[in-house]
Length: 594
Image (cartoon, rainbow, N blue to C red):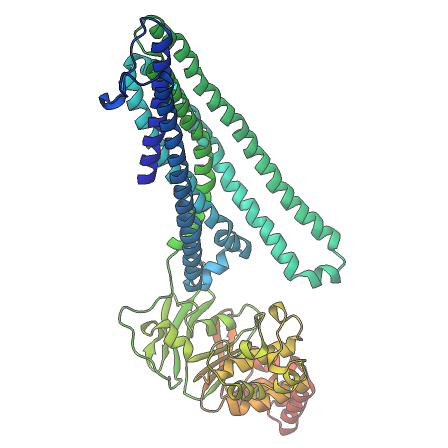
């Protein structure tokens, strides 16, 4: 702001010297004209030639203009460096960092298009608020204060007369802001929808092409794009009418100046140069700043909408946070206990109801249930992706909320139902959770996950760079890399969300055989539906609508009437499962109940 003060002082000084030059010329050509008032009583010697005096005044004006240009350049560079290089970059980093710390609930409630827009376009809108609203408003208030003070110093009544339209300007600006504020909010929502349409179209291109729906997808995008265009045109229409109106009102002041100011000059109540001409220059500058109200008013609504959305992210509470004095957790033993756990995503809808069970270190716990029974939700409470509404989840006898989140999650290896791979090498994807892993460790994890052979068959082996999302791999290959990624951490607790869902029976047999050794010494939770997976479990938990309805080993549950026996009987999904059921029939384990 100090540079702006200097720029104002230089501008006013240059304008004052212009008025001084006019008064000097008038005093030389018009007999009886009043002598010019030199600043601070300093004036050239009386014996200086007229051209010399005019040359001095012109030189001062030119010198001030050059100095103003240099300072203005310095100010512009510093302002852009502050806003673009520092504020925007740091704010974007801050928003991204906050996104990494928010719980899954935030992502459940916000579409990807909305989040992308907040990190990109809305951060830029926040920059506009700083640069186009805060800084410009400070400059405007400072400039108007200086201009009005200078004009009052020249002639009080002329100043009051010329500024009589100012209240009208504020009224028009306020009405405009109220009109366009909801329009800018709606425009942001339409842009979110447009980005979401684009994102979904790119991610689901195989589905679109597979069902020959390219025309329909194009039409949906065209409609979303057209909605943004129409909304933007409505806003631009209001802005295009508002700006000329502000300019017209400001020009009324010039008419008042010519009428009243001219009268004062003719009656020798106001000097022509340092009075009327300087006043006209000040009024023009004043009108220019007032006309800038239209830009500021428009920027306020556009930028505030974006800034509000950015700060909604920054103000979003971090639900999953470390305890004030977290309990140290090195390598966990792996004991896991649920005590009367109640949880849901959106109150009052409950997903898990009074869930209680205990897993001893090294046990394999299989979870079975229909779609929506709460299987994945149950496992997501162990690494604290969510916290239960009531009850507790304990690891090694301590509530997981007492541990540092990072410490807890370093003890949990996870293979999600839908695994995501990054556009990086296969080795880097496997080592994602353990970047310092050696190539030997990476290969060992890949061999356990039955991924080594197909990795070595790729063009560059472990150094092969995957396409976006691992699109150049089959579902089973992506799954095996995800399993290797989890096993590389050597976690004491392993969560497998239906790891064999996308794998053929032969590969499944290979993976499960290999993972038998991987499960040794760690507590494993696996969501499964195949008997070939379920029979390996030390304990099977059957969920129905969020409640545990059965619990026991495969043999125990097969000998008891209930959901597990019915599911096992109906889901003969592969040869191994069929053999297992045939074996149970032969031994009479299920007898007539089958």
